[in-house]
Image (cartoon, rainbow, N blue to C red; front, side, top):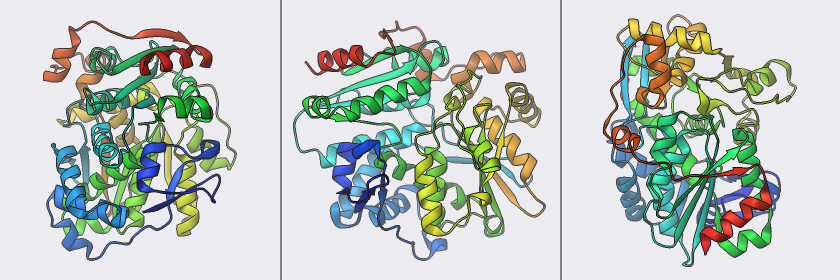
Length: 427
């Protein structure tokens, strides 16, 4: 598998190099040179999740890893289902929260851990990542206890849900969590500064587990195929998928799935009031505003890292950006949709509710809609309880970590201070 740096096309790397590096020069994202178009899609969709995912990922990786190795990686990573549930006629929820940290990031985080182990060249590695909520837990649990790997996770202090924080800031060991006095975009900027510091990068074996790492993104392609496999032939013909979007890795993966042959009529980018992309698609002007804290905090991103990959893909495929659906939803509108779904017999949380609301606004007669539910409602218990006047039960992993002490340290938005932390962690 060959990939190139979107910013500096002459930088070209293998899959293994891309997994180990994370980012290219000048903070450039890696992107596949070739996007294989898969064969008989109906036959592929009839396969089981692990077998199908092995074929998809092997087609991307090529001969760099044997198919048997890819199968063992997928089998170890995807130990849980991606479930389609009908909410009402022609409208389905895709539940991506049945993994160990109850969020869609488990798919990418666990596959990245398997990938890094497969392509490792020895020596110690420091994983540095920023999270707006769910990435932190998925990465922490995927890499917890792995030899010669230290993980440092930055998150905006006071801007993720308490239960999200508990799920990954209570592990200790090789997992180090840092609460930054700033927003998620500030955390993301610190990660980029670290990658631009060549001396530091070499010294501590720096890598990233954000969705900027191509292995995480590739894993996410697979659950779009899994979702479509659970629909009947007629429903597949006019399929619209609504994706709750923050850093835009999830939508990128969906569009890559479409590029590889998945039958999707169109995608919808659904955001909260941090609406840089919807405004850009309407006006053609890229104008990020200061990040606003919302009840859908995992989407509180105004400068999404993965957007350049979407533009690159659309340009290569000849897809106009105007074909993307889009919409921004306020906290009140999100709450209304949580209530509406509950009245339909479906318990949801704000991120999935945002995707549902924009889907309902834009779904046309004869179309089938799927909206992504990216986290278990219990991860946003305070918000959901308040909206529905209920008491959402905590599933096992959350109940266990909710009573454990936080182990995070607090840090100002200061790169010099972060460098000290990174060097101390690596020891």
